[in-house]
Length: 83
Image (cartoon, rainbow, N blue to C red; front, side, top):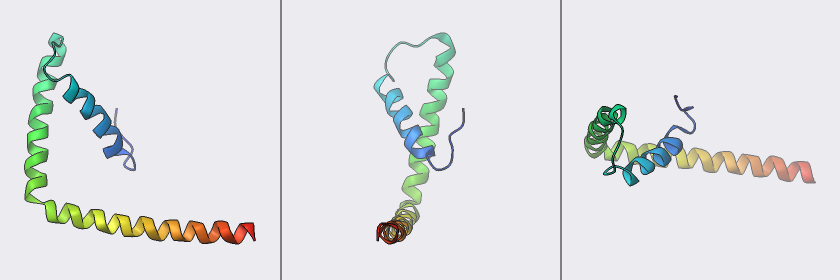
């Protein structure tokens, strides 16, 4: 099942943490290859993140600025409605 773009990382981080907690446990035969695939995907993600950390951090800062502006707008609207 796919994640919605607005909560993709939040949901995946939670699921990935669960996989981390159970990485060394026994799995059924249908989980052997997906576990190996997940490990390989994680390796690629780490390599990509390492190579592009400045861009990732810049995007985070841009998103945080946008969120601050949205919060200021919502506060103004709410205060206006209360008055």
